[in-house]
Amino acid sequence: MEPGDSTKQARAAAQLRKGVLEYCVLALMRDRPRYGVELLHALEESGALATSQGTVYPLLSRLRRDDLVTTTWQESASGPPRRYYALTDSGRAALDEFTRVWPGFRNAVDAFLTSPHPAAPALPPTGDPV
Image (cartoon, rainbow, N blue to C red; front, side, top):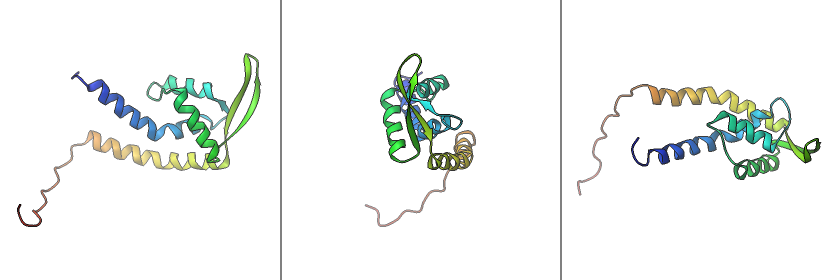
């Protein structure tokens, strides 16, 4: 591995994570409400989507402001009450739309990454030479 490769890989992973994290969090709530630490653990278990509280909690606040999730407080047998997040109808619709769009997006990216593509033809020069 070349020097700096791990930094480049981390940057690429961070950019990919930013683009899909919101929808992965919504997907985790598809079947039942979840609390923040539970969401963090599920993301961590995936490996590629592991993130921090400093990322997830602001995301959950934004999802709530955007009416994609709603919250309720529930008592916990093992500590203080927990805030549970659940999909709203708008959140379910956003997740459904992402679910429809994702396969085409994924396939397009995969095609660029796995297939050789012919070089673009050279463009004719424009204007006068300098």
